[in-house]
Image 1: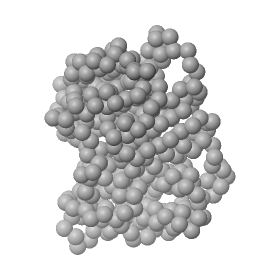
Image 2: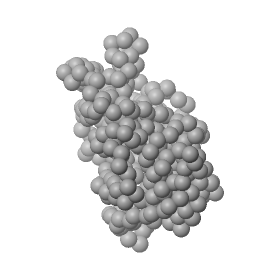
Image 3: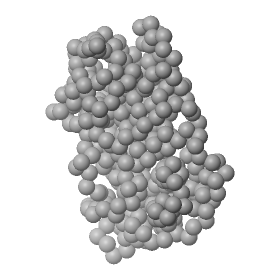
Image 4: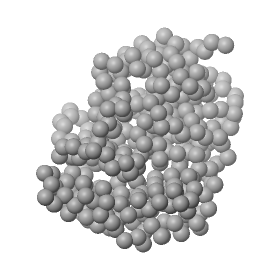
Length: 349
């Protein structure tokens, strides 16, 4: 899945920075003796990587589509039968398409006669998505599948339909003509099943509230960097995940997302949001990913973190995320700098 802010290309830099801090501060505990928390999990790349290293994981994201994917990636510890999963995938791929909510609102054929002829998906892929999504709810209700299988299959659908979307990247706009990739027929492809023996828990909550109710050893924060809300950028994936057939409006068919707005996208509230999280965190090691184009300055982040303990920072220059080229924004350079801010927090006994 193409995702803004994904740490896939930076995972080595992130992990090397974290492990360097642990080693330099004399951390002797093994991964299976520690809890790693990722409270802005996205597609679960970071949490999944530390899960593979043996850490117990707490993961969270306020977006439900992200929660679905991460819940499978993090909580399913090899408890799925691979043969049965393949059989379920094959059955879903052989379904005939149906004219459901996605087709009727986000395909060119389904929006005939409407004010906006939206073309987020081809007619075929929209119908296929509707058929699979509705079947998953029916299977879960009839106990044909269990909860673990449901999240695996739904996460696979979200990832597969996203790969066929007729967008430049995000769902803030659709293309006037179907691009070649959007013309291909969607095939439901299974998400990776990550085996492990660690204890894991995934939440679908506001990270600023969840921080008050959890504790662990390593806290990783990767909040939004700018004022563009994820809930509007990925609103159709949210609707597919929830299958709640919401009231939508406007040219892009937005759902209401007031309850999912992040304080980290607000210039007037972002610093207080960060400080409140750091102050409330019951974790010794706190790491924050951020880049040099975010709405918080490096100096501002440093000044907050230094209030609570020992501060480090690591930097890496890398190529700008490709979506910027698709949003008609002009930049002075095609490269940016990623920061890993680190706090060794002074915890009260």
